[in-house]
Amino acid sequence: MPDSKPAPPTNPRGIPAAPFIDAVTDYVSSRAEVEPTLRSFQEMISKYQFMEVNTTKRAAGLRDKIPDITKTLETVRFLSARKSSDAPLQTNFELNDTLYARATVAPADADEVYLWLGANVMLAYPIAEAAAMLADKLAVAQTSLQNCEEDLEFLREQITTLEVATARVYNWDVVQRRKEKVEGKGEEEEEGEKQ
Image 1: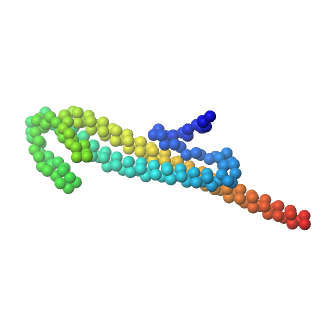
Image 2: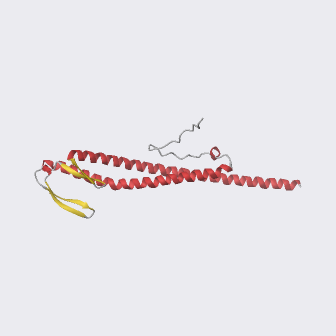
Image 3: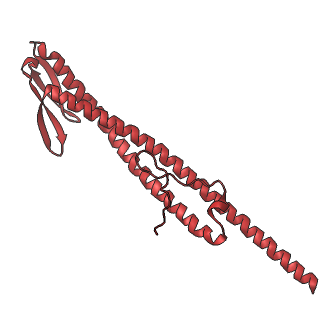
């Protein structure tokens, strides 16, 4: 019959919670179990730190992407708002970080916008559809960033919990060694008195 151990609790994105050790004796029953337990905790800390690094990178990417999406959405909304105007619109648009081009746009004639999707792909969208798609992308990116920040907080808590658990198990082991040492000396003294 397979071991039906309950799964550890997780956060909403499935990251498992670290075990909290209130009483070391409930977790470690002998000194022989100390080394494997400490190794297990260190391995778990390494996994959490790896997840923390990846989540930090993902959050940084989202922080870079959100302003670009916001700027593009504002531009599409501005063009949509100016659609009823007959006056041509003079604009400078960014080709690269330091390269701009000047253009004259007739908002009344602009039925679609071209959006750079990345990976050398640019597509034409009707203005309303482009605004809706960009609003959706912005909402998804903001939600993902919020989830990353929650995950980072959770991961830091788990790392701290495991560091505390490691210290508790290590300290318990030190106390046990001292007890064994004192008991060993006590036995030697008793044997010396008997002789």
